[in-house]
Each structure stands twice: as C-alpha cells, then as structure tokens.
Image 1 (tube, rainbow, N blue to C red):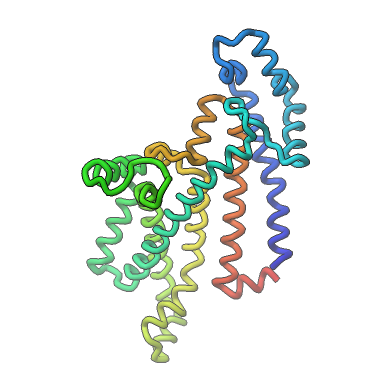
Image 2: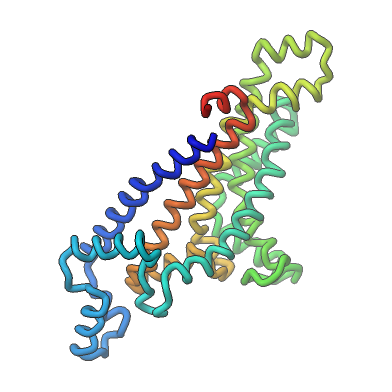
Length: 309
C-alpha cells in the first residue's frame, strides 16, 4: 500500500509540470499588458518598465517558465500577486480554508441524503417514492446553481430572515450556500446509487443470501451496498474535486471569499501569478482526491486492496 501511494504521488510530478506549462503558455500569449492592468492606465512609462523589469515580463518565454519552475521547486515560491503584492501561496491558502469548509459541508449533505435516497429507490423500484425521488433528482441536476442560490436568499434571508445572505463567518451563514451547492450532488449521488444498487440486487449471490434466510437488511447493507459503492465513490470523488476547485457561481452569489472567486478576480485583473497558482492548486486537489478514492476502493473491496500489494 505504501509503495502504491508513493508511486501515485510521484506520478503527480509530470501532471503538475504539464499543467504549469500549458497555463503558463496560455497566459504568455494572452493579449494585454499586466503592467498596465496592475499599475493603471495613468502610470508613467518609467513605472511600467520598472514593473516589467522587476517581474521579468520582458524575458523570453523559456527563461520566464524556467525561473517559475525553479522557484516553485527549490524555494516553494510560486510568485507574488501583481495586485496585492502578497505571496500567491498565502492568497490561495487564505481562500482555501473557506472553500474547504464549504466543500466538506456541501459534500456531507450530498452523501447523507443521496445514498439513502438511492438505496430506498432501488429497493422500492417503480413505487411512488421512487418516482418522486427521480423527478426531484432530475430537477436538482437541471437547476442552475446561481438561480437556486438566489431563490434561497429571497426565501430564507429576505422574507423569513432565518439565515444570512452572504459571508462565511458563522455556521448559519454556511447553510444557504451549502444547500445551494449540494443540490446537484444529492441528485447525482441518488441516481448513481439507485442505478448501481439495481444492478447488484439482481446478481446471483444476492439471491443466494436471501435463499439462506438472511434478513433483508443484512442482504442490503452487508452484501449489496458494498459492491454497489464503487461507482458511487467515483462520483463522490469527482464532485468533491469540483467543489475544492472553487464553486465560482455559488461563491459569487453569496459573496464568499473562496478560491473560485479569487480566480475570477485574478483573471479580470490579469493577475497571472494568482491564475497560475490557482490552476496548480486545482490540479493538486483533483489528483489527491483521486488518490483518496483509489484507497477507499481498497477499503470497500478486498479484491482491489489485494492488487495494491
């Protein structure tokens, strides 16, 4: 297991290098002068040139990219923001704490509601509960996140006054953005759990367990569910990686200072170091979540764990 984890971590190196090269190239060829955007249109030519010299913007592409990789690898320095002058790592970590709280809370709601709904829908296929659940899941997948967020603000903040409409300073402030962000997660997990459970409960070993006189609860929770969780865990991992990447619309609607909003503001201001660091952060987050998902596979299915050895 340790060797497997070590190999996966080492495999991140070429992935991150490739992501850094692609993002750096795209930003290099993007029209616009970062010096003018950072200093303003009224800045003098001397100030603009001094900014370009200080940040090495006039150097050739390979020199700039090599310097960026060298500083990142040997110094842990991925640059300073053109706008705030702070280290990029500090900017990302400050917003990452907020995004992580929102992602974990939203993912918990999605899992707690999605998996039970999916199991019950599969057990009671074609029942009224199943039909209503599938209709609500379809609505949850189709509903735009920003629209749902605005509706929640109008109902629970403006009319009822139960929850704050913005910020992340308290538990109450987390409720509305988490509900808005978890709607699609609940719908996706519900549909995937139902589909996977329906496939598993028709297998021969499930019939054998029932023929032996096992209780239905034992058949479902001990025999069917563990074998149905593999695709569900995959969906959960992908969705959690998306949430860690920053839910841009949700963070914008609820004025949450997270990674997604930071990236949007950096793109508007041509703050290249923030954009590059943010994309690297998202790549690392997705890679680590995928590694965690693979380890969970082994915990759920001993056959997969045996392959790690």
